[in-house]
Length: 311
Length: 85
Image (tube, each protein chain N blue to C red):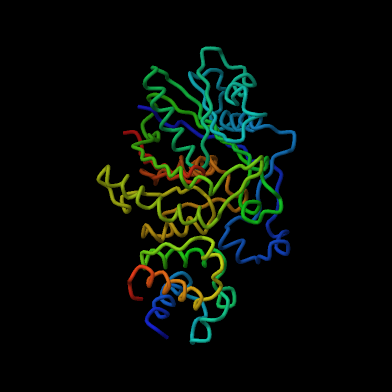
């Protein structure tokens, strides 16, 4: 059984305030606060690479654990904005910067907002099939590398962040166990969110329609798989695309508003890092016994999983 | 208001209960002027297409600025499918 031990994070200190862009984009305070839900977006330093962000997320994880992580059996980086042009793979660069032993499997996972849930499943299977005891799942997708500062659709939403999740075979009683999972893809509509010649383009309407219509059936199907209903889940963690889309999902799933967590005001939509950033704040809550994670976006791709406590 | 207009107003008020759609003249006011912002307009369009089980191309949806423009578009789509509003 693979458990989540803990999650470290790194949110760069750089910030761009959406309130400073009200005139440029003809928006008001209410729209920023109640619809986008993003008051400022985080921005990495210009000389900071994706791998650097991963290393800093690991430092936070080590601080939380109170110990160094000097060896793991595998290391995965989920990103679509890798170091340089993606060759070599960013996970190998992170491996080198951390000075990890050579008997460590490293590979990248090229997914966007569904990437964390995919990553949990991939690592869980990979670790089990290869008899591994520990793995690191990094997320780091700094969209500031590809954002057009004059594009209202993207510049107000996306922020930079990285996370590092330590997974371990076994684990203490009460540790969070990911699974089962559900996955979905609609490749024919992938153009709704894409990198065209180095610049991010997003068809907001298409992404909204996809999110609002694809995610609730998957969540319900996952719950049906395990014979649970929404009321059996203590907390729903949806990808933090915007406050508006999270509110829509809550409404469409018929959930009480306080059953869905929100934390994007201070950094924005951090793509594959949004779920682990959100989850980090709830891991230690003794009141929680079950959570449901759902990530959706680039692809178009969506993935959901349960998290339950190990008995 | 026609039954179609009444249905659209009901859906719009589901999207934003504070929208100011009180009389027929409001149906010709721009969404922003009746309290429906751009994100709510997206939600409205989705709910309308789901309610009537119709598909409207993005290029046409993007031109819709008022409730009456939406009503005409929906009516046209329903007519093309041989259905009544």
